[in-house]
Length: 283
Length: 289
Image (cartoon, rainbow over all chains, first blue to last red; front, side, top):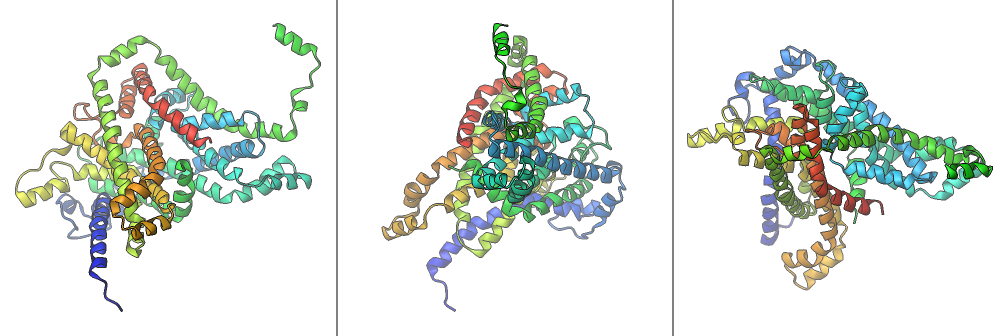
């Protein structure tokens, strides 16, 4: 084994000098949350870097809903799950159909629809929230899960359509022609040729929509208000309203809430980072 | 009237006969999105613009000191916050381009802020900065014996913290995007410059920057548009306080909405449009090519 030269050691030291602060910066809020989650109430507020008596008691309190703020934890967890899955499914349906129609069938006006969708994508969601809230009131959907589902589909669909259109433009035209010559109807073409070939992009888009819906705070907090209707992030935000909030339980709930999307993100990482975003800013 | 008459004079085939079956299917398959778009984008936006039509709303906004403050805060957030973030991202993309096993591991951890939802982590930061119980001031007390500052009670510090939270959350995303740009640069160029004895600044100035500047500028503009809609960083950390001094346009719009001043909320959004629309136009031109 050969010893590293002085120059190599110097480079490595410089890299560590960047790497260590990056690591600390990244981990501080997450570590802080984790320490709170495993601290008993007395330890949590003492400013220790590691609790003297780490415990999973907080998790048990949350799972058994043994606190005033947590009495609807499971139903809120369920609401978050159902809404996220519904948004994923509906976005996939709407966006796949639209992308197939625009890219493969070359429907008249398809390009204009694509541009309108892109325009929606770039309007900041917080700006659209104001008129959206009033519109949901007009439609009579306020405090109904459908309001949040439809709002999130509206926000997720433009990007989904764009990604799917980019991917399906790359499929060769001959494929459609061959299938049509064999007597495939348009629906068969869609079901038997298009959807199977698009699977990787469909997984990416579905995951994107599900994560977007699970993580959404602003729309959820505007559109839903009853304790048994709201999603987990709104419940977390409601902790803030009280002065004597049980912060160790808030952090525990937040930790539980953050785990599923993080797991999904890492499981689908290769679709998420490369596939979805590189196209958005390619020069 | 004349046009419709002359059109019906000539025997035109019914609509279904003029379109081929695939085109009929095309319209059917596009219909779900068009319905969503009409019901939840066109109608709300049109209704919102109609609400924002009265000049009185703009006069009221002009006279509302919170609006002026929010506009300035938004500018600070965008101009200073985003540029700092993108410069750090540009720098870190060079760091993560180094081929080392431990840097690969670090990049997996580095993406965490982007992978986890923002609400729990923002609340975690909020509690860290709590003047009495937060870990920051407890450490300050332990080491200096003095009470730390009341972080979120000073509007300048609170806004800086909100920008910090925003950077924490979105830095990994932009670093990765810039990293893909950096990895696309041919390695031969760097080897050739090594032979010529170029230093790191010359390599950056004459190789890296020229091939990345379009990407970098696009990313910066895109980040500005998205940051305009960053409601969580400010709302969950400071709630717009103290004394409504740290609002940005997105939280201000929601504040007016909660106060049932919908026309003011819409007017404040309309005021941002001269800034937003050119950016949106630029991005759309880039993406629809």
